[in-house]
Image (tube, rainbow, N blue to C red; front, side, top):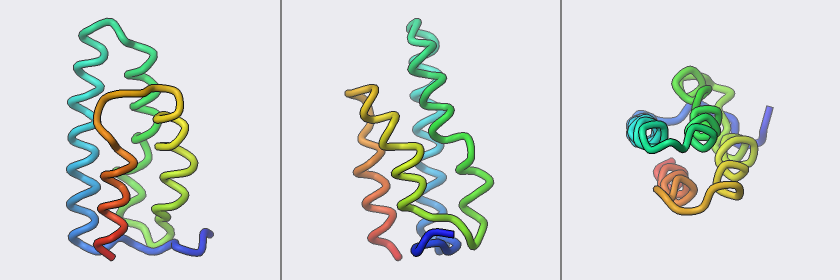
Length: 92
């Protein structure tokens, strides 16, 4: 487990769900515009989130490091998911 592992509070869960919603919209737009690899990478970055945000072992830092940061390093532009996650973290 990571040092910050804990279930997000209700406000954080809502914000994480908002991020997931935005990611789904982004995936749809990327796929429709012929950017399948980027859409796939974004889906990979978010695919565990719906399950994990309800668990006491969820770690914002691990989600950032293992999933979001690699996506952002590879693909610039689009929504600033790392900034959104920083905002979620501040709500603890």
